[in-house]
Every structure is written in structure tokens, then in C-alpha cells.
Image 1 (cartoon, helix red, strand yellow):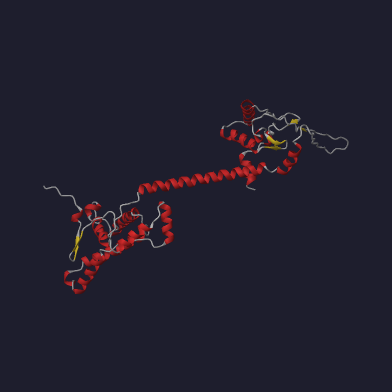
Image 2 (spheres, helix red, strand yellow):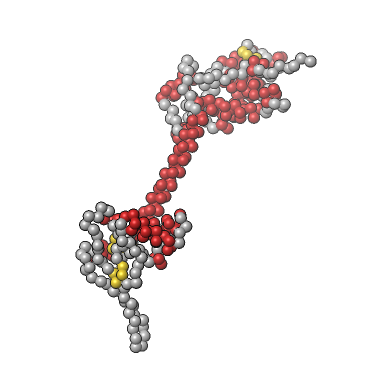
Length: 341
């Protein structure tokens, strides 16, 4: 038994009048109507589709996707795939109606229709997107703009068809660029969110600005004064007072190479630098330290590496190197909730 020969494109052909329609998909030029019909014939052959013949809709859908890619490779943007599919089906129906006309009905009128159809078949199968707004979106999607050269090429394909496009847009490269753009947009959004969180933390740290300005005037002189805070319990015959000393004494070294804003934990005795709260919160959240461990880490690093005199709050003395009370250390979540109010 002789083995069957595989089907080739040359066998997938039909004759309309004196014109033979053979499937082909040329490179460097935009396909004409005849090429569309020839490829529909090829895609619908049973040997090409598989065991059963492919439907007209399926073949038109496959061809519309390939056709759109071909146009985009030439850097010219098209209408949607569903519209391309509808145009392909309409063209193929017109072709099959003429081919399948019975011989006894092929009169002079029929011959004129065939002649007109074959004449139009060598013209461009135009699927160009005329909507300027949609073209701009497609240009942003593929990150390649259609230039005057491409428009000139398109006009040539509609008329003389003497130009040839050899500068194709690599689809894989376009997808890579698209992915990089998405990653960059995501990174920019993350940075913006980080800046917004930082600004909110700064706003919370500056809630006592008016009080710190008053304190900064007094902090320029060594050991200016001590303030006391007192509370009285209402009682019939006794009163209790609690005092806490706020020390304004500054022992800054004259030759301290550390910038002034980083020399102490506090800007004044009443205002702790916002970075202190942020550092303690970072140590607790990222490195899973306890409150005591986080405060100890801040004191140890400052004293050992930067020759500071940081310490925890003593019973009755607070200076510019004193850590805030543990009960006053606000977590990141609290900062955000306060900033969003």
C-alpha cells in the first residue's frame, strides 16, 4: 500500500475565474484580500485542522490573531480581533458564494461580479485602527509609537504597494518591555507609599512643635532652670505632690564631629526625635525584639560606636540623651492611625 503524501499549501487552492487562490503569508508587506482568502482555504482543510474540518469561525479567529500580529510587527496598530474576524468571514462568504455558483447560472452578470471581485482581491485588506485615542492606548501598551514612516508605508500598501517593511517589532521584546513597565510602576507606587508614611510619621513627631520652639530658646544656656510637675489629690486635710526634674544641661563636646541634629536623642527635653520611635519600632517588628531589648540596642550602639551618653530614664532626671518612657513608645500602627485622622 502506498503511503499517503502529506498535504501541502500548494494543494489547498481554489480557482475563481482565471485566478488561482493558493495560501501564502508574505513577509514585509501587509496582506491583500486574496491572501486572506487563501489562508482561510488552507486553515479549513481537514489535513491542516486535524481529523475533522475546522469551522469557519475557528479558522477566521486564528487568522485574525495572526493578521493582527503581522500588522503590529510592521508597527501599525489594528482594530480589535473580533472586528477583524467579522471582516474575514464576510470576505470569505463573498468568495465562497461566487465559487459555489452552479455552472448553469454563470451568466454575464456573474462574470462581471467575478471580475470585480478578483480586481478588488489585490487591494489591501485594511484593518487599520482609525480611532486615534485607541491607537494611543495601543502605543502605550506596546511602548512603540507609530511614526510618519509607518504611516507612509501604510498609505503605500493601500495604493502602489512598492514599499517593503524590514523593521519588525519583536513581540517577545514588547512583552518584556511591558513587564518592565509594570514592575517600574509597582516600584514607584511602593516608594510613594513609603514617602507618604514617612511624612505622616514626621507630622506626628512634630505635634509638639510649638512647645519645642519655646524650649529651644531656653536650651541654649547651660543649667538654666528646673521645672516641676505637681499633682494634687483632692482631700479634706492632706495634699500629695509629685516632682520630676527636667534637666536642660548640655554637655556637648566642642570638638564633636557628629552633626548637631544627631548628637542627642531629643531635640528638647519635651520632644523626642521621631527617628527614635521609628528605630525602636523597626527593631521590634523586623528583628522581633522586646521593648527592653530594642531600647538596650539603641543605647549600646549609640554609646559604643558613636561615643554618646545615651541612657534610660532615671527616677527624677531627664536630659537630651534620655530615652522616652516605654509607655510612650508608639508603634508603627499607632503612628499610621494617628496620621490618617
